[in-house]
Image (cartoon, rainbow, N blue to C red; front, side, top):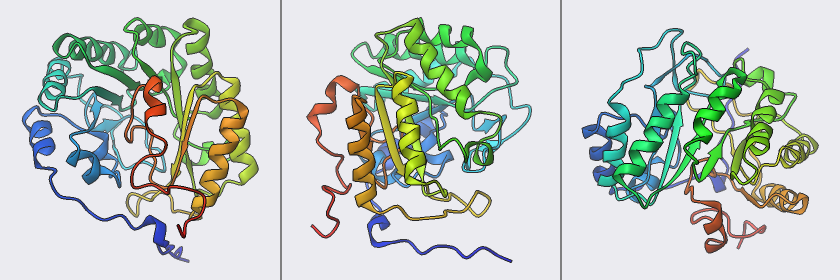
Amino acid sequence: MREEKLLLPPWLHKPLRGGTIQTEKAVRQCGLCTVCEEALCPNLSECYQEKRAAFLLLGPLCTRACAFCSVGFSPCPPSPDAGEPSRVAACCAELALRHAVLTMVTRDDLADGGALHLANTVCAVRQMVPEVTVEVLTSDFAGSSSAVDIILREKPEVFAHNLETVRSLSPKVRSLATYDGSLSLLRSIKEKEPGQVTKSSLMVGLGESVVEVQEALLDLKRAGVDCVTIGQYLQPTSKQVAVKEWIHPDLFCRYEMYGKELGIQEVIAAPFVRSSYKARPLKRASETQRLPNEVKNCDPSR
């Protein structure tokens, strides 16, 4: 029996924006991929209009096929493009980025999981745009401690790795990556570099309970994570796992308050929030009370 698709609630209707041509042109001319496009992010037009993009390194093909993700799959993608780091740097300069988000596909086919390529990109961006701050959003590197060390040597302002979902749902929606493995990676970053800012993200609406989300937040706190983002899962295409529930804005507020009560330094929770959406160094978080175009308070009628 075919699963009935849920209709979007009012708070998930987002108007399209124009003015994205300059960002699209810069990305195309530099021959780059963005997670904004490959993952069919609902914030793409808004971010591109504001000359922001999250660069997707190592090509558009991932060696894992997670049930929630629309990024392409291949067990043997092409070798890393040695020219990509310099092109990413050139694009950052063209867009005059002040904070660059560098994410990656998972590359289990590479000995270091692509860590050196990501580190080289961080280095290239800083050389071309010295004033930029850098956020890396990495895979789990199949549990490789040495791969984490390669990234840490570049001292990114933010080191992010997404837990994605609650413990019970992780085996159903993630491919090979595990809940405990992700927590272990995040914990190891703090053990190696206590001053390194770490970040993680959760999707909700996949069938998790409130208690499970609270448990995930507690686990992230115990792993020393400084910043957590929580957003509504939106099914990218019919090939991905279906949405089970639309989470009301009030509940996002509850999650945000709960995370802050646990002592997590920054928790941003709202329907359209994504790991790299309006990303910024944690020290600047106090400048923005809540992201534009998100619910302003816990009363959706106001």
